[in-house]
Image (cartoon, rainbow, N blue to C red; front, side, top):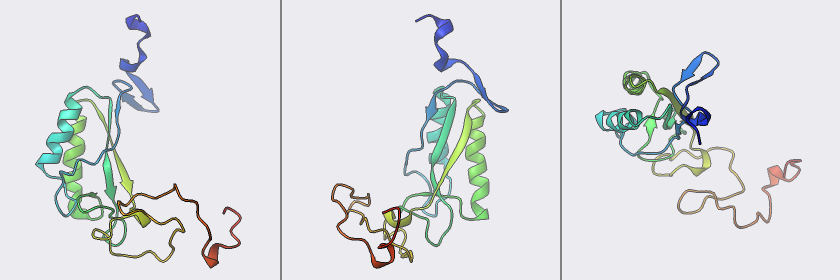
Length: 155
């Protein structure tokens, strides 16, 4: 394929954002952040290596948004408090210093959260029970709905 037709490596625009290419590093747990969800040098080094490798965009791993119910794992990046802003900023600046767009995936663990990381039990539970590994088990059909969902038009 000729160089002029190879669009993957060409710069392009999304609105006012100019990306150096179409290669995106998806969000993946790297388990390197601090125990409180903070950014540390190990996680900065991890994302810096990816940025140096030539991707156009990095989506930083999922980050929980509050201390009450959104944490889904014991080692999980956090954006739930002002004391974490400086570290998140340092991480973003490191990524952007290589001309790479930095995005952050925010998340809420919900019913799939590890109970050791999130003991809060939400008041509304799904009728699909999580398996022991924490992922939803969709292989078995739901045999009955909870009473509150019996007339659910979406069931």
